[in-house]
Image (cartoon, rainbow, N blue to C red; front, top):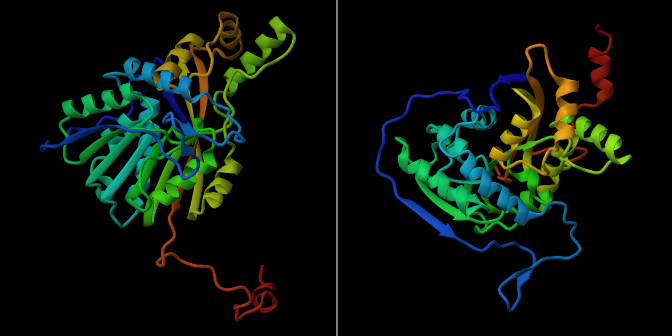
Length: 345
């Protein structure tokens, strides 16, 4: 568990010296979103499968991302940076390089800023549903001293990836995919977009995230309305992450989890932080804030908020990956092993 003490997580947790700059070209692309399913009707709108359950309002989430782009402008978020840094650390464990990378949704700015040459990336494509968020990332890149990576910017949807099959070496998503209505489908599209032996890296918020806020909202609803209704978004559990990777067809799947406890001056500061991250689902009413403060306030006057982050890694299949032996091909039985080693204790 990691603890971050800040005024809604806005101080710099990780600071790095800027690198030397080189000339870089930028491309901003506004694009429709495409998918392996559905088709376009005569009015140009995508006809989606009506049988799919719609949990999240993607148009509303785009508005939240637009707002977050302006609230987080010219500011670094210590929590977001810590998650992105932990995710990108996995690139240092890989011996191979990834010339073309695709970064979708979530904390785009933190990922780009914290890459620092890891993964041998030469070309980076950054995508978000929000045009304002993309513009903010592009403006920040123009002011940056590190222009060594050729960067393109794309407006698109994680549920309908607008990239060709087998076109990128690396896909990174930091704190973005948990807002998709069809998470398995999005991960399948990511797998198809990867070249053979391509790597998928993702960090999503887990089901234990903001457990204190869930308790406060539940008690407030029971007190004021005599019942409860969902106020926070449903999130995946740790046990689901491995199944998602396997279902998407990734080989060598890996899952690990981390918890971050961020301290705030008040519950309203927590909500301001969630707005700046584009993670709000519903506004916290004053009575809920009072319950939160009274139940979870610490001796130093701050209130904690827990963020559970699930990290997922997976590879697109390749002949170089280790393969399980054919069933029945073993040359030594477990009975022989037990006779040889079972008596030793």
